[in-house]
Amino acid sequence: MGKKNLMITLLILFLVLLTSCSQGNNPKTSGDPQPEPATENPNEKPDDKPDTKPDDTEKPDTNPGVKPAEQPDHNNNNSSPNNPSPSSNPYEITKTNYTENNIKINYPQLKKSSDQQKEKTINQLLKKEAIKVLNYYLPEVQDLTLEINYEIKSKSPSLLSIQYTGVGYMNGVAHPNNHYYTTNIDIETGTILKLKDMINIDENFVGNLKQNAKSMKPEHQGILNSIHPSDLLNMLTNADSLDNIGTENQSDTFSYFTSDSLGISIPVSHAEGDHAEFEITYQAIAQNIHSLLLLSLLQQ
Image (cartoon, rainbow, N blue to C red):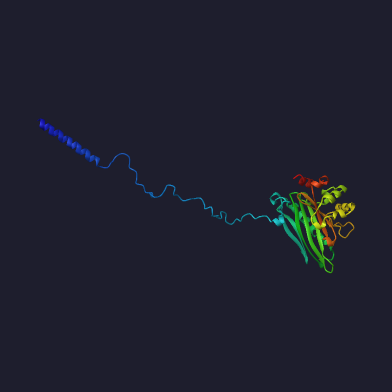
């Protein structure tokens, strides 16, 4: 009996051991599902993604049909150290002209201002003043060859100062005339400004001009000192008008204004060029300035 029981026990242990080995070789069929095999390219790095940043060398047209902003016409707008940038002005300047036979007079016109009625008034005034140069030749303009151009000496929200120069020639006359005249406009009021509207013209001013004004051409240096003070006083008092040509009140003296100086043009002989220009700083004539427009420039 002892041997029989021992055999049974060994048989049971053998069966248990056999069952355990069989379960260890079978795949797991219960518990959490196993992950799917990876499908990504094993050679692809995690950072290997398309670069969405545009190439710095490319400049695509991001707004087709829209042109870049045009640059201002510096010739017409005359932006310079003597003139504020056009963007600081409530208006722009465009060039136009008066033509008749052999006559051509270029003159400026305002555009894009906020006050259209005032703009129209000023533009009519600019044209009227520009063509007054014909008063030198009336009524025989049919024999006249004339060309006049302009330069903006000052362009600010309050003041527009224009210089006109050119040459006129009448058939049969010995020599041409070198013309010089100016137009100064108060933009706020739409009116003409003359020298006497801006400056207190007295003996002190005349003396100051003689002593401190700078000639724009070396050959004209000393001309102011050759004019008697009372004559120069009269010339300056009647300056800036083409209305009295041919009369005893005719004046060929004109003024213009820059950002820092007053300009004066006086008549001289044809051999000397027909006109001579001088400038004097506002600081030098501060005590004679009675215009708020010039005082504001003086304080800049």
